[in-house]
Length: 202
Image (tube, rainbow, N blue to C red; front, side, top):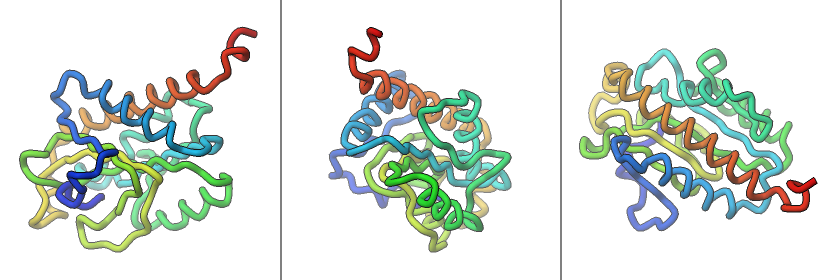
């Protein structure tokens, strides 16, 4: 789980926070993701790491996103973290070591749940830089990602483990659906924009 949303700098120009009820949320997320994807020097090895566990309702956001992405069987990215094979505190470092061994200079997108202020619950965040998994529950885990997306699933600041266990699955499912569809659409759009026109005409 990522730290509280209050730790994200409001002055950071490359970050986005938008409520899932906003009718334009998928378009906004796709636009911001395309901005980040175009900033990357190479996307030859695009890797998505969905952090979390299905043993906690609130912390299941990452594995749910990963499971949704896996259904598309896309060759455009490498995926780590699903409900069947979650990436969590126990195997996170091992997974990151494997990624850097298998993929040369990977561009990593981290996905995780986080806790935040009550007014921010239900928001999706897209930001430059790595996730800090476990910081919200006082765990020291390795950072994940060149960029990251988080869903604010509940209120932070008190009894975080209890709060995560008692997070509504309905909200987590809605956030995971938005994140997975937006991410897949952005990567697909980036790919077709990147293919030379000549190659498309052959």
